[in-house]
Picture 1: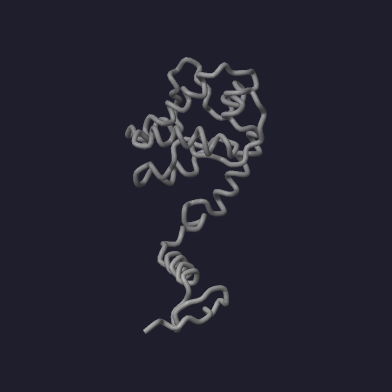
Picture 2: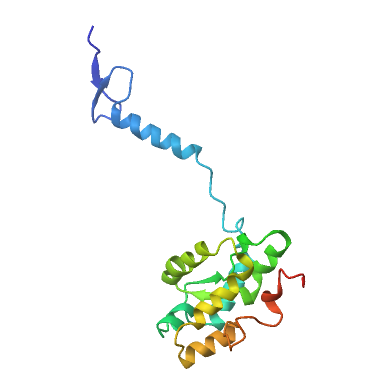
Amino acid sequence: MKPILVRCMCGRAWAIKGEPCERCKTKAKSKEGKRNEPKRKTACQQGYGYDWQQLSTDVRSEHPYCILCLCRDGRSVAPDLVDHIVPFATVPGRLREHYRCSRPNLQPLCNKCHSEDKRRFDIEHEHDWRSMRRKWIALLNSFTLSAEARWALQRLGLLDEGTGGTQRGGIESLGRGDF
């Protein structure tokens, strides 16, 4: 016996009586898949609450240019965000909170530099969090720096004056038993 075809409830296609059409089946499956996906954490749950917003605003007002654009190209581009030089999620246990809000670990970047260059750098060095800051300082200082770029790096504590990228105190000393 042939199945009886009727209009689907959506009114767009024919379907076997009592069943949805193929289009409605596909739609139902995609909705069902979205319900089962884990929900993404909020910004506050990820460590970017009110205190972070205030700190980010302060850093961007003190350093009005993307540090990577300034060093690499000599361009004065307004920063869109504040980036962690050493991503605090890669730092183990009790040091994590210090790395999250420590000014020596923060730098202003534009969205382009953050999403392309800094992300590539983070992926290449993600398992080496202790030397990540030193390598980033070496990279920034490898460009031919304008006077403005040198001044900005010096204010951020990222200028390498032949010291091999190390600094006294601050975040460089973390992880060596000084904390």
